[in-house]
Structure formats: C-alpha cells, structure tokens
Length: 162
Image 1 (cartoon, rainbow, N blue to C red):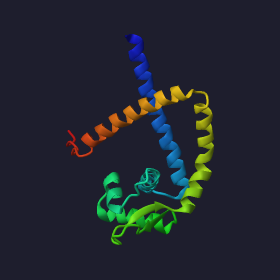
Image 2: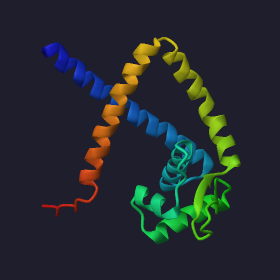
Image 3: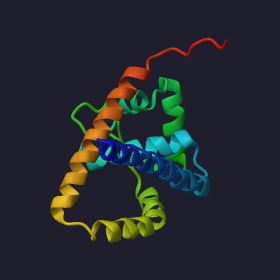
C-alpha cells in the first residue's frame, strides 16, 4: 500500500509543478504582450470556449473570471483595443454579443506556443494510444476534482486575521 501512496503523492506533486511551470510560461507570454494577468485569463477563456463551439458572452466571461460587469467591460475593451479580441453579433437577437479571439492574437499565440506544442507532442509520441487514453481519463478526473473544489471555495469569505 505504501507504493500506491508514494505514487499518488508523486502524481499530485507533478501536477502541481506542471501547473506552476505552465503559469510561468503564461506569465512570460502576458509580459511580452503587455497583458494584465486578468487579460490573459480572459483570452484563455475565450479561446477554450471557441474550441468547444460555445463562444462566450461578456456576462459568461465575467462569471468565469469572477469579475463585476464593469471590470469585465474594462478587460474586453482593453483586449479589443489591443487587437486580441473582437465582439460579434451572431444570433438572431442582435443584442447578444459573443467574444471571439482575434486573428492577430492567434498568430502571436501560435508563434509563442508552437515550440511548446512540438515538445509536448514529442513526449506524447512516446506513448501508445491506450496509454494516452488512460492519461486523459486520469486528467479529466483530476480536472473535475479541482473544478468542484473551486466551486465550493470561491464563494467563501476571507477570515479575519488574528
């Protein structure tokens, strides 16, 4: 049983270290592009929503980022001015605004992240389809666990300092 506990601890440590290193890479991209941390989070949310085929509205973006309506508008305005984001009206209801990742932003992201993509694919090429499927199952479960925990803790109020 000790071997299992050690393996689980190692996996959690590796996930934590990967998360930290990924944040460092993201912060480097943000710094090079002159983006605020919140701007980068917004761009990532817009990009992931587009990949899922479910573009974000400003309201949904604000919910995801935990921002007020005014703060969300400020982020969107900044990103639109910088050419990273565009607002579109795609539904029959012209009042509904969707947020799209702008092509100049995609080009910058591709240029920055392609070397990482190549390195990542080289690692994944060392594994069978069955192995990768198992890793996907594991990471999906871990993502669900951390997402559920985040839902539970994000509405907590800070405790007073002693």
